[in-house]
Length: 199
Image (cartoon, rainbow, N blue to C red; front, side):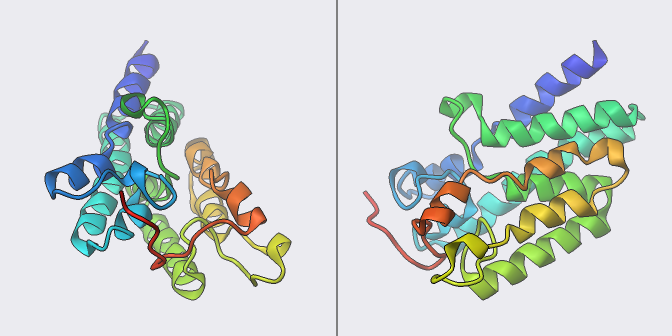
């Protein structure tokens, strides 16, 4: 019963659509109406507001960090902490408030890792930042535009490998299965800094 209740609370917290909330609060277009249509940090950045993107990143990370941190502080078993972490992550990817159409979950998964082990969380964010800086793709590292099938999903792999203990690593493994993999393989994923029409 404790696990079920904790999972429900974590899922609802993870479902908070900070990209939409921040955009509305700052008078920006709904992030679902432009770019990739993803309610996440990188799509908010396409609006041209770095402040909105930074607030979205912080909010998405916190909604992964808070439920897991609370579960750990309450002394819940590792198995329940893993359930909480997975629920928070799935809340972001499939938010009930947005008809189950959410973001990619990178920031939320990183928040989960920061709660479990801050070193693993920082390492994951560093790897993601380096890959994004080198490729300008948020969802993965890309080797070359001419060889689309040799791209490596570095951030997701880092999330899966850096989490510990094993009982808590399930949500981080989910970070490796990104909603934009299909777009990347088709060469349709837009790079950070490429602005699409904002309606």
